[in-house]
Length: 234
Image (cartoon, rainbow, N blue to C red; front, side, top):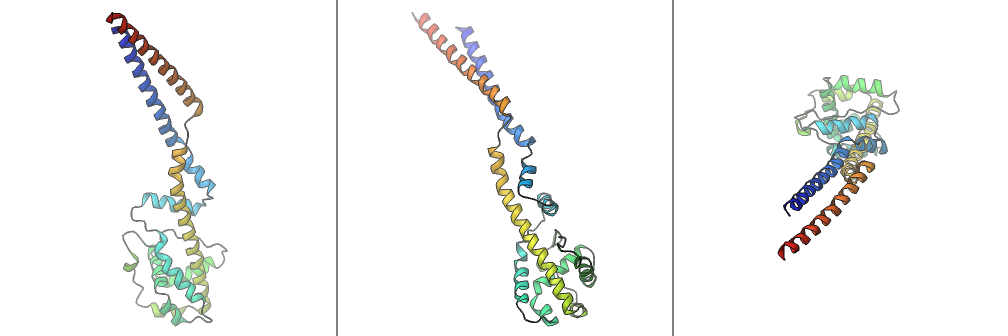
């Protein structure tokens, strides 16, 4: 009877090891799979979106683009005007001015030079590039103060310049918000895909068959032990 009990204990240990190995198969699959990369491809991540996702992952100070809603509203309102004036730029685009001031500071440029360089480089492009981080780390929109000579800077550019510059930033903001939505969707989908991910089916099938054999063996051993107990009870 002692020998039979030892056999049952040994079988139970083997079953525990099998269950652990099956669990590790799932864990290994999640760690080594290409789910992350495949999902990005399926969602058509471009280089800018992939860079922004990486930035969000590693930068604890990152602020998403929700705060630029006010800027988008200002641009929409200004676009409805029949004619644009320098006073409109000064008085009706306060969030927009802070926005571009922050971008200039991030690039260590004064605002005038930044606007000039943006006009020169992006007027030639159909799809303007994206500055991924608008507000520098450790700052908020409230911390950004336009330069004291903002009136002179605004009036130093023509109305056509401002129309083009506003359009450039409108395109950037639109793409930025699209990127954010795509990344948010990605972050919702990734855990679901990881949960649904299966281990290597061939290895897992072998482990399941071995587990079934051990379960049958354990049942048989317990039955034999019960018969032995009956025999000794007599």
